[in-house]
Image 1 (cartoon, helix red, strand yellow):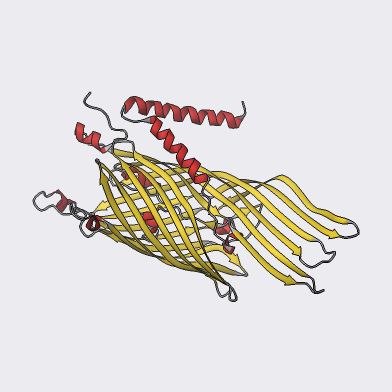
Image 2 (cartoon, helix red, strand yellow):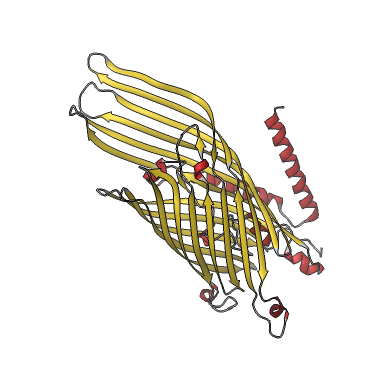
Length: 472
């Protein structure tokens, strides 16, 4: 048995023992349901890489995707310190320990993009599956109610599959050589990278700590063609660079939640809604990646006297390489007034200057992102109006992009709006989150993109996971 197979065997044995223990302790858990959801998560997400014609994705490892679920994106992406008892938060793994119900989450986004380069304008639509995720508390809160136990700590777990980056562009340009020959340049790119994540978090007192581990993988394809359209004996050129990447992903998260009016919340006669401050901190180490590249450079010409001639300038298969994706540090603060409203700020630094990639060498710059946002519920306990119970969200953000074109770094800004509709039936409950992200990213006067992203998220909650049976 190889080392890789031995390691996989150890992991599967540990995970299998864990599931067997959960089955024996919590008879109401349907393990077939767990495996079914896991397969659906992986299969659907891997088949859902969408395609917008984005010239920006030519550089780096493509257009980078947010880790935030849709309800957090609709608040400007303030997930580092945000806590929700029934919805997932991938930005800070420590938030898993606050879950009070199993949650199944799916996100979709639809994009309208208008790209301008000073002379030309192109408008297009695209759509993509944003993520698939599930999370659950390993200590069901209803067990504590039945047994009147006061748990000293809470434990949460989650899984997610989401895109990390996407490459998608198709650009053509017609030129004339010094000799008057007409030729066309074609640039195309496809593919991207994904993350599969397993998260765990423990809450003790006012503090919670979490960690995500997982696998980063993908395939990126770049092609350049130079085709002469006039009848001459010039050689057409085709350049192809296709490489796969993979690496181990990890992220650490810490949260502190302090209630500012503890005494008032204990007074039954004058009970007040808790007013709390949550502080979050996350750290993502740099990711060491391995790459495998296929490279070809071929010239062809249709010469009447000799037929089609072909000359291979460069050809290589399975060229092994390595690289490093950058580390990240984020800090956030959020103020919450019961179920009524919350507001927060999020600051994120990514150290892209440490990026290396032997399969596609390029220099990138560090980035800074600042997001501000919050949500408001008119009447969280209303039994008559779903609109009164709904969450209305607003956010703003500014961020750098690591890619540099002609010595200028890409930058972007935007405003987000959203609403979360709570739904309930047959003692089940869920949330539908609908929002929009309107903004711009540009490189000075060279290239600009106005975008409007429609975000849609659906969270289904299940209270019975890991609930013990007390009556037969």
